[in-house]
Picture (cartoon, rainbow, N blue to C red):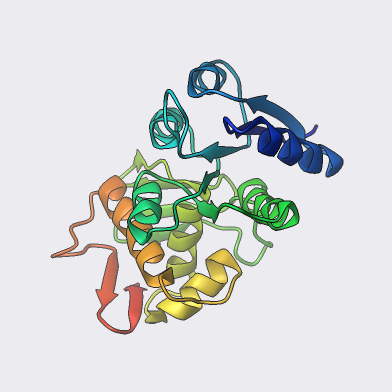
Amino acid sequence: MKLRILVVDDEKTITDLVGIYLRNEGYDVTLAYTGADAANLILTREFDLAILDVMLPDIDGFELLRTIRADHTYPVIMLTARSAPADKIEGLSLGADDYVVKPFRPLVLVARVKAQLRRYTSYGSRDEQTSRIISINGLEINPDAHSVTVDGKPVRCTPIEYSILLYLAENRGRIVPVEDLFRAVWNEEFMQGSNNTIMVHIRHLREKSGDDAQNPRFIKNIWGVGYTIEG
């Protein structure tokens, strides 16, 4: 079964070009040129990934991202001509998984799509050695079911959030430097601004799991070094 991708951009030339490149890779691609059309598709169809332009004439990409995150955890890549750090942080804060600045090379976007889908489709996939329930102070991670619970209550994580939590849990009792965490989860080299990206996703994890940053039950921030979950 082909993986389904939604591409939203009011610049038809860009949208169509991205669609061609993704279809050439074997994906089932749906195109939308307005925020209203995209919102309807998000509410009525199932997707495995969405690519959203931020600056749409009617409903902007951030609002579409909110709509997606209300019910879905699949990866979202934001496209924008604005490269200000504040815009990137806003997207990440709303639950975006990646951010691509225009103009971009289509092959670079395709590579980012593949990376996100690889994480999404292998969400929780581990070899037999680690394919077991990890239980830490009321937090339970089931790699087979790619599920997370706290005190028996389910926690809905995006693939990025799940990967962060699982990596920290698998390294419980050890302080994981932010550079190592970023490389392990994103499979990219640590760059300026990467720390902010991690911080945003850690904040989301804390909000979803009811973890107090001032008195953490699970994820502890070792300032200037990294993060740890004490086993």
